[in-house]
Length: 601
Image 1: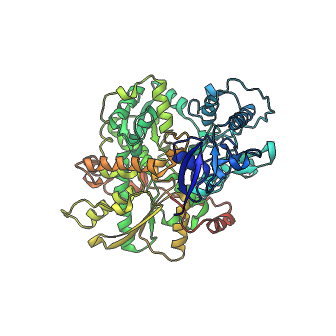
Image 2 (image 1 turned 30 degrees about the vertical axis):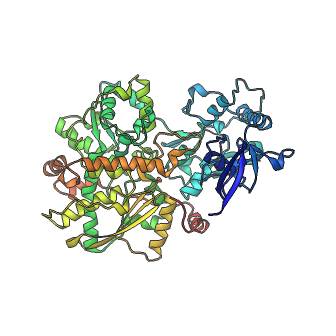
Image 3 (image 1 turned 180 degrees about the horizontal axis):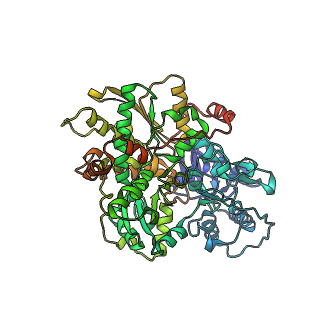
């Protein structure tokens, strides 16, 4: 790559040609503030917070550094009086039309606009701009959209379009009346939104946030007539610690169980057990379809954002989706049936709360298809962030909590279930058990499908199941990459099993995970997701029991209750169906043509 030499604040710097001034400065540890910029995702120059002065334009307008490429010999100044005054005035203008309710805002102390105002020592707002009172949109179970707190940075729009390949959000109206919203100002539930929550991760203020269920859960915990059971997704154990200042990828399994017990939950179970049951059902489903050579490829259905994407944009693939419920929903169904019967508890008194990395799990829990024997499988879903707020509100010193175990019998899990939280983990877990089922009595080492790990958007592998035959599998994360994969299959590409996760990196990059990253939103980067996924792999490697079919609790529940995988009872409790939600078929035909041939993961 060609190198460019320039000078920033009288310091000589060398960067690759094509680099913008903002990134050039950051490479030299010179921080230029910004709001609208996300590296490789959004560089619109709309917020004007990243203004700098260059030797060429000292007497002209300042430049937005995020959209200004470096030039040979260019002299840049990032902290002149003119720059400081301009930046301060830009932030004052933003604050003048912003809702001043910081102390009650969900993003309080983690708001980029708030931190910019503090950094620039803005102690009062001299400008009193006109404010338009917009209605708050919250008619869906997953994401609240508050235009009154929007700074029109358009990062949510860029994430939705450039990373997820959806394009639900865009600028509506013009000038001062501009609002970033779905077409015709619809609620997200009425648009083609897949509820993945990546827009929430990108939002610098409280304009987008998950729909909280904390008050409802606290009310249930305070009700002596209710028996409240909680389950935690695999990825939570490697992400919750970040909310309490612990390094990325820190494993906090024991402290997580201890915190939930102190919050008052009657039982603390692991969704990892549900993942082991999912592996059992899905691996047998794969072998059954391979034998019949029908409805291939089998496509995973554990990611509710992906399922909604398929229902809206590719309903022709609904027959390919695994009929298995997600681990969250399998756990909910088993808690209200198997566990309730075993403990002699009225299922109507049981409240199931799921701690999930994902806003789409809130949508999933509310689906009418996920009802077992007249009851919703899961009553409430809390994101990782919501649980962190509950722990802080309760005054628990998370780091000081002792390590405790999950409750039995639904707290035992294999290493295979742990890796569910990272892209490729579901496939690796399912193939381990499918291989064992197809080759009974085998003593061969555990399959390590390292080619399916990592941050690449699409990964492929050919696997020999011996008596089960050779299978070709693919692992996809991010719905933009899902479009590419599905279009390939429509053109004739052959796969036997395809894992698709809606969020980049899988659950470790879910829309409900901790939000950090001032100033560069590193939580959206491959590095954060990689560290989290690696932590899950280390948990898998540390366990003696690394396959779902070895789990003694799984064996017991099949012996005592379910019978065998894909039995009539298993199909009643653990399987579901899907419905077409196609609304705008023209859009799905247009989007692939707009995307480059090899988009980033």
